[in-house]
Image 1 (cartoon, rainbow, N blue to C red):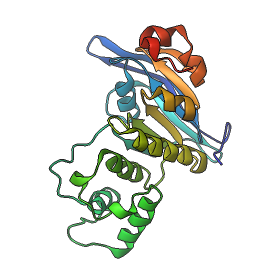
Image 2 (image 1 turned 135 degrees about the horizontal axis):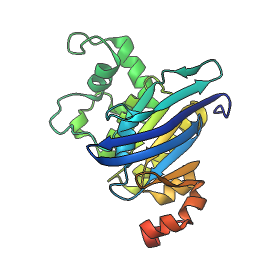
Image 3 (image 1 turned 180 degrees about the horizontal axis):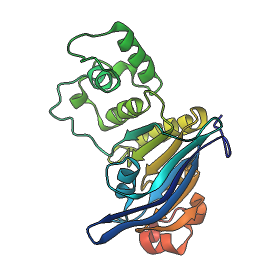
Image 4 (image 1 turned 30 degrees about the vertical axis):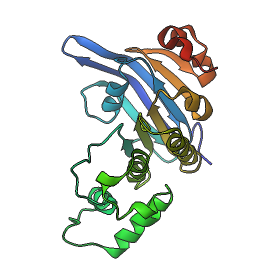
Length: 242
């Protein structure tokens, strides 16, 4: 079971981003306990992707990200990331090559470690993807690639897992499998999850908290509370799921 308040949490405090004279984000605060998933929603241009980039350190920002557990406060956190999409059309790599390349210091084209191969295959099995280990990444379906990317992002398991619209363009069955796996991770692996998503049906079923952005936090709370708010209805109209 996940650890809860006072034992393990990620605090994102007063994150602000300004590009030129334009303020993209202002004083965004998110507090996520291990074993919890917070979903970020908002219209296009609301700052969702910018927030993720700020957390990942890819854009200049003010504010801080702090990880706390029962043994240490303020230690550097380990972050896993699954992007919305990855351009692999021209990649000759296999799934093993890709994961080994990211997780090993040794060039995979020089030496194929049987131990490393078996470790990766065991990890892929947790995501229903062990049979894909020798597949070319450019031959994977959208759902298969996202399962592989999720396996990569959690090897080793992070303190904070960031998902940027991870099932965009994937069919209903693929989405259901993905959200079920995320639910297992948050319950069993003591990690905090931030996800950007527009899958309101799945958000209602799986999210612990929802934050609605429009340059700043305009709504936050449990899914039903946010989905029934005026801000949500004004932004998404008849798409409310309550």
